[in-house]
Image (cartoon, rainbow, N blue to C red; front, side, top):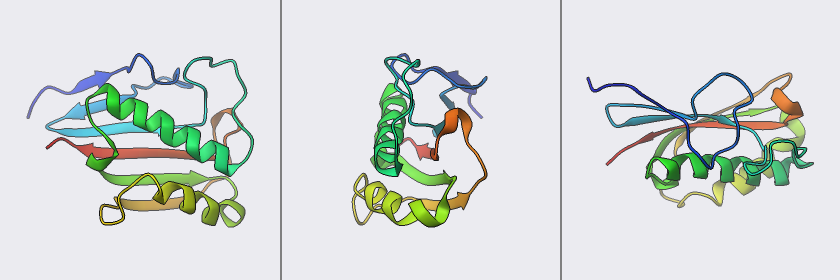
Length: 131
């Protein structure tokens, strides 16, 4: 087993809790759940609505992946957390699927939760694998 790397990505959003952006070991990259926070100015409020938040979350995850030299094409598993599952599931799915090739959709779990940090309504984490 190779050494575990605990990585902070310079242009990724400021953590809202004590965690690393990415933990990598043996070619596996575990990308911490991202909210729709602004990576350039953490004091800004998160955007309103599931569409804007889903796009921002995916942008933040892409930043974390790029920070370790990977892209969304290397993602093998995703977990999605929604605070209003009934209202937001279909819209989030429509936006989410646009980030992946049709024949390369990661395994996925989506769950409804009671709350997320910073008042977010969607949070997504990922697992990726190096070639």
